[in-house]
Length: 362
Image (cartoon, rainbow, N blue to C red; front, side, top):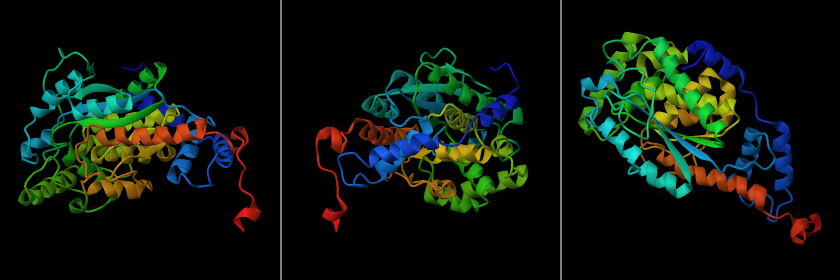
């Protein structure tokens, strides 16, 4: 794992996260002003390109090596009947990811992204499966409705695994990250994490997940309320929240967000589960918020709570609720386009095109 303790490793990572590069953003804004288009004509793409310059610390950044960090883990709370699917789906889908047959694989190929799948807590022995990073901490979390989902050190270890993934892939040239996950029962954990961090009523941040019946939703809400009452997670301590009512894959994605920010790489937030991780990361280090890029609006109601908390405006709404990183990968192409227009468009001078004059606009 790491030579220092998990807590120290997290503290070191957080300490290395700084603000966006103001000089790079000024240079990017100056360049936007002289590109062959009316000022502001590319809308949000212009502002995003400037933010991306600030993240990378370069006036014209490039993001040719995209990585989708898919974390997989199971949840003991499924024993409470909160999911429409059995836990056996998790290892089956991890194998599907490894074989390249899932939606995230198809969409990643479409945008030229690399899928990196990590077993951080699948509740089955998949150690023989090729094409997976085997970093299992335990065979899934415990049932949070009966006690803490995991220990604090297990949560810290999961965060460290996410940071390590970033460090390893950045050393190989990774320039942009997307968050993805797999784990039956994880919408229950994500709802609990978001409710604990934001203080919102559980019913306001809990949806039907994989498609439980409408009349089963009150039971899911009640299970989460019971878990929160039993475990009393400390909203001021995101690691405590992750340990008591979170998931191993959620904690690992928290590490991905923090690791990307520490390495000055943008990290594209996927849907509901990823939002819980991003919310925890931003609470652990407010400076990390500026490195988080939103993708889409999930059908899960709690997603909007995190978008509001982080002050993020999603790029699109396609009524998606799959997870895996699918929405984030689609958004990667938009962020890449924003950077490319900044870097590759001609200026008025280089193209020999007359620029705007105040007289012509008066």
